[in-house]
Image (cartoon, rainbow, N blue to C red; front, side, top):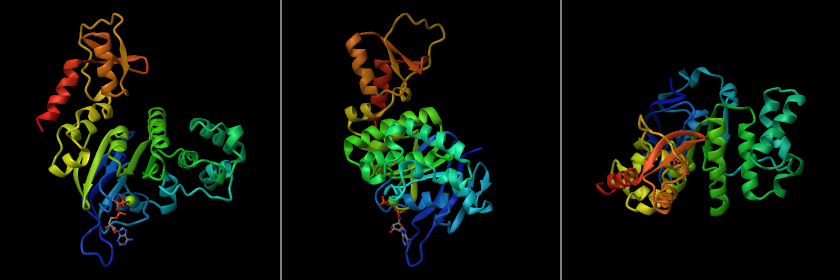
Length: 321
Ligand SMILES: Nc1ncnc2c1ncn2[C@@H]1O[C@H](COP(=O)(O)OP(=O)(O)OP(=O)(O)O)[C@@H](O)[C@H]1O
Ligand SMILES: [Mg+2]
C-alpha cells in the first residue's frame, strides 16, 4: 500500500479558465523522498495543499495509507503531517523551544515528555539546545530559522512531511548545507516526504523520485537518473538540462549507476565509495587509483560495485537521447 495515492486529482479555482491541477495520478511509496518540480504556476503548491486539505480537489481522490483523506477529521489529518513552508512561519514572540513544542502541546504531551523531545530535535538539526533553546527567531540566521521550522515539523514525529520550497528564501551556500543536512536526516529518519521546488539541482540532489509538472499535468514521474537519461519530452529535457554531462555526474548518486555485487566477488582492499556520493567523485577516485571497480558501501555494508563502464553506460544512455 502506498503512503500517499493521488487518483485523478484536479483542482480548478473559481474564475479561472483551466484547472490549476489537472487529472494527476501517482503513488508515493512509504519512506521515499518525492520532489514536485516544475515552473512557477504549474500547480505544485496547489497539489501539495490538497494533501493536508488546505484545498479540496474539484474531482479525484487522495488516500493516505489507503484511507480516503475526506474520511479523516481535518485536525487529525494535519497533526499526522509535518508541514514546512517557504516563509518559515516561526512565531516571533515564542522562543525556539516553544516553537518546536507547538505540535506536541497540541497533542497534549506532558511537560516531562516535551522538554527532552525539543532538545533531541535541536541536537538533530545541529543547534546545540543549551545555546539555542531560549533564543527568539529574530536572533537566528535565515538558515537556522529554517532548521527550526524543520524541527517543528518533525516534533510530533509525523511519518509524512510536506515541504513547500523550504529553502527557497535562503542563499546558495546555506542552501547547499541544508540540503546535505536534509539528506542525512532522511537517511536516519526515513520519513515519507513530498517536497516542492522549482530548483532543478535541488530536485536531482534530494529526490528518490521526481514528479515533473507542466501546466497542472504530470509529464514524467521517475528517478533522477531516468529523468536525466530518458526525459519524456523536449520540455523535460530542457528543464533538467539533460545535455550537460559533467554537471549530471555531480548530481547523480553512485547508487543510481552501480551494479550488483557479482556472485564470486571477493573484496581485497579496493577503494570504497559511499552509495550516496556523486558519480563525479566516483569518477575521480577511479581515475586517481587506477582500479577496475570501486566497492560501494551503504554505512559499512558492501551493496554494489562501480566501474568506469558503469559510469560510461550512464553517460552513453544520456548522449543517445
Ligand atoms: N487561490 C487561488 N485562486 C485562483 N487561482 C489560484 C489560486 N491559487 C493558485 N492559483 C493559480 O493556480 C495555478 C497554480 O498555482 P500554484 O501556486 O499551485 O503554482 P506553483 O507551481 O506552486 O508555483 P510557484 O513555483 O510560483 O510557487 C497558478 O496559475 C495560480 O495563479
Ligand atoms: Mg508554489
